[in-house]
Image (cartoon, rainbow, N blue to C red):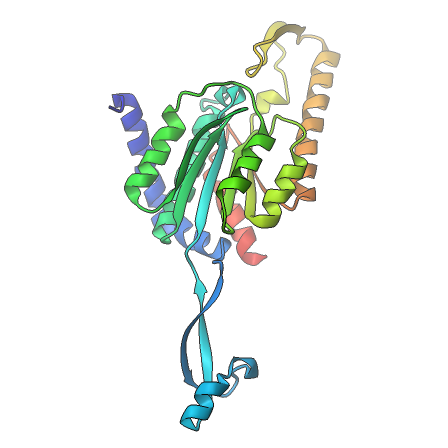
Length: 290
């Protein structure tokens, strides 16, 4: 039985997402994520301008005229939503947690996918594989995925991106679209990410919060690591303390950007204090132009 508040949250997300998909995202999604290739559809008489390489010589010889093969895009895709649900996802300084933003993004992509007759699956991970739901089609399936995104009770607060990436390589046999949603607060995952990127169309959704970069000037402040539980006290009234914190945080974010670039994984930066719709739309349009 779904709790009443959770049901309302899922219903609101469905209504908002379906409206977005109907008005704008559906077509943009279709263009951004191409099909698996081209498949033969039919033959028709040759017309001026048709490529010579498409002539079907066997049919042409049989009927005494020139016929060409017509190909159509093999449209059906498999989309895997791979979502980091470690402890750092429970952070958000502007009204929404990263995990809530992740659910919204996945909802938009999932409803766009089923509108285009694609399959959608879900992988939730921390430093364990928390949940894997094989790809399927249909509204009820997508609603189940969204419920899991909001309600799954994780077993661990830590992160292991390499473990999740190895699991993706194991469960996805055909080339698929992999949406990797995380704040990427981990190390030593580049080799596995490169392997996934070579086999699949991998997109990294980088979740960010402004308070992870800039500390407010509020005097003595206790900072707790959401993944390890370790706490330290820092004096935010000291300019050098805030400056060092910001420098280290920006360096970490730059490392993530560089890693995604080296592994040829497209990056969508989504901030918790902003609507996630605009970055997604910009990414789809960038893909279409490219």
